[in-house]
Image (cartoon, rainbow, N blue to C red; front, side, top):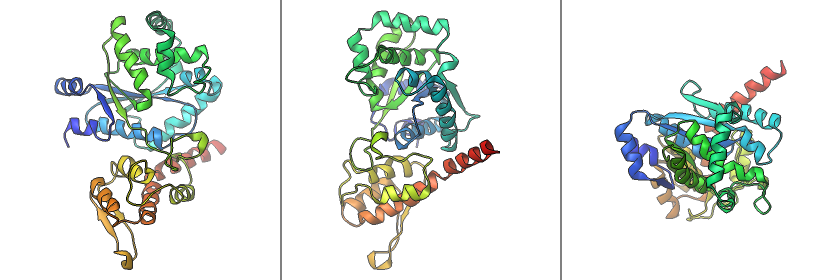
Length: 325
């Protein structure tokens, strides 16, 4: 798999592919980032973009993780002290997921977003952005979409300035970040900064087949106990022969196959015996034609996700034991 294939695999959109190719041709180590609002536990939705950062590191990118504690504060997710504690915890989870702290630059928003030169850029962008545009940019990520606070209108302007201040070439995020990224592409050149290339990952469904939401409990936090991961996956929505909005097949596609060379689904001999798949496409074909039963698929999904997330549980346990000493 060449650099471009590695960077764009499992993505929903690249804006633009031509700009990305030119960048890869011209530069050995472009700079990419994801900003994570530090408002709760890291879950499978966050892990999707973390997986993409791992792909980009393998493709030679320098990677930045913005632990956006000030953004979380502006979006009414807690006090500054609370969101900073969450940021510290999130950092440890990302490291356990594979983002090597010696190769990944972890940055806290409060480390630079209160500096006068940063605030001036935000105010300059505010002069160029209508209230309606700022509000539309926040529609997908705002807690108070119906009656937003002024602080939440500042949020997308700051996110655009983050890209400039952190000297980012490629902004990575889920499709819910698209409007904010498009604001950055349009407005940053007016302030004298280059427009970033934007890479968007899909929004995978929750375990009930509906929109993933922490408040609905239809996702998996990366630090959950193994037995809870198994319970949730075995109870998940997984209609036979159907992959559309199927959280189990999505987990295989976006979380399991990018991290393993092959997948073995274990079954009794009377049901065909064990089946090994070298690619997601092969597994999907077997499921769609009815060769794989949903329960067997869910059992294999639970087995692999428990293994993949084991380093997070171990790191969290180690942190907790040191804290209690």
